[in-house]
Amino acid sequence: MTESDPADPAVAMRAHCSGHVAIVGRPNVGKSTLLNRIVGHKLSITSDRPQTTRHRIVGIVTRPDAQLVFIDSPGYQTRTGGAMNRVLNRTAVQVAQDADVVILVCDGRGWTAADERIARLLPTDRPVLLAINKIDAVDDKAALLPLVQRATACRAFDEVVPISAKSGRQVPLLLDLCAARLPEGPPMYDPDSLTDRSERFLAAELIREKLFRRLGEEVPYDSTVEIEMYEELPKLRRIHAVVLVEREGQKPIVLGAGGERIKRIATEARQDLEKLLGCKVYLELFVKVKSGWAATEQSLRAYGYE
Ligand SMILES: Nc1nc2c(ncn2[C@@H]2O[C@H](COP(=O)(O)OP(=O)(O)OP(=O)(O)O)[C@@H](O)[C@H]2O)c(=O)[nH]1
Ligand SMILES: [Mg+2]
Image (cartoon, rainbow, N blue to C red; front, side, top):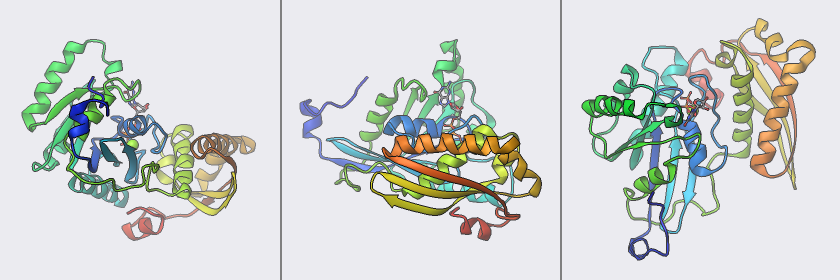
């Protein structure tokens, strides 16, 4: 492990570096889990369902020698789809194009045709690192060798690093390999900043995470969350939020029997938010039907999807 030590003369002599590191890959490989592990806070929502992330999420790491600005992206869809898929794919490609360094994340349990298509889409004029994630779930480590061979057959990688975003294994090494490839420059953000996203945005995202974790098949994909009121008081946040669903029949699913499911969703989101913000949160959650909220790129923009 090559964690940087500011007392090390080689590190002390290097000029300060800063830049953007894109985290890209197909859905569900652990990109958001990796971002959260790197930053040490839950900034990006995660679930065991594909297409959980819908926005670019910034996570900032400030060290004595470098400031690394990581950008989590929506999982790149290789099947064709509607307006949401187009918007998500555009974001994923843009994130890689705007970065100084790219981390392509794949699942150590197998390299797929979807991984290959994404690998070929990535820029060829800047460093691309392959992070083989979920190695905690790979019993036979020898099976990683054919995966590396298949991955490197479709493009060159600057480094190949097996990691576990879940346990944190080899994540410090990945961080150092990224830092070593950033251009010289001063910090871009205040050293205390963790993200460029507002509390209001993070609150909506944490609620959306609970929809993904608590609701069955299609409802999370047909939902979004809007913050109707966000009041910032000393050591307290008062929030009114609405879960928007596509169809009338989805409303009782979100509510659950006697409103028990929405209550649980609100409680879990509130607890996560209190942990992230370090203050008390009052959260009131409602559900409304808004047909067609995701039908077109224009309507998606109205709900904050770039
Ligand atoms: N065993 C294991 N599971 C992991 C690891 N990293 C992530 N996961 C799990 O993989 C699932 C997907 O993780 P996410 O971080 O949401 O994946 P993602 O790539 O951001 O997914 P999208 O946003 O949908 O593209 C979750 O159930 C995670 O807990 C890991 O290192 N080991
Ligand atoms: Mg994600």
